[in-house]
Amino acid sequence: MKVHLLEKSFETENKLEPERKTELAKKLGLQPRQVAVWFQNRRARWKTKQLERDYDVLKASYDSLRSNYDSVVKENEKLKFHIPFFFMMDMYVALGVGFGLVGLLYRVVGLSYISLSDSTLLYHY
Image 1 (cartoon, helix red, strand yellow):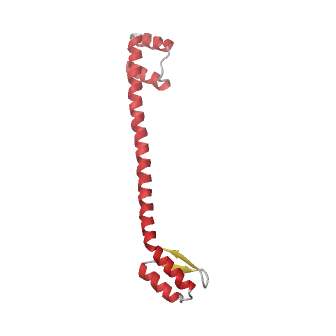
Image 2 (cartoon, helix red, strand yellow):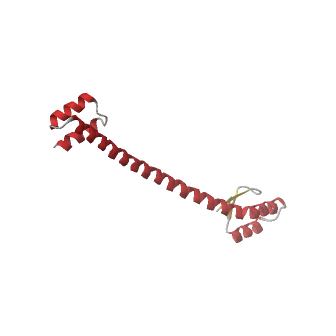
Image 3 (cartoon, helix red, strand yellow):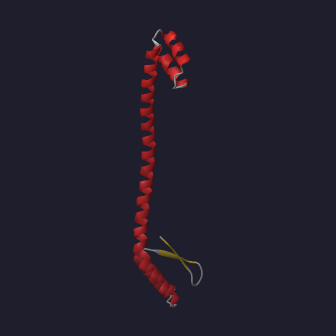
């Protein structure tokens, strides 16, 4: 019963004003100092729990960002690998080499293309 009343009071306000401390002490049959110490200890536990919750949120955010970063790095490496092929494809198109050869080269490197017009290509995976 005493702990329940202290917990309810803590939920209302975790800081203890002198008047409230005296009132609680009288209701519970405790010394005002005992009530003050209980509130100090309860605030310390509350702060620890809050830090744990904040850590969990930050850790989840970090893990998500790290995963996204790793995906971007992998994609970047994949794109770096294909840059010479894109350059070569553009050269073939500029030289007027048929789209059949360009399409064949794209299939060899594992890419595909969509013809937007007779002379424009959109590269995609």
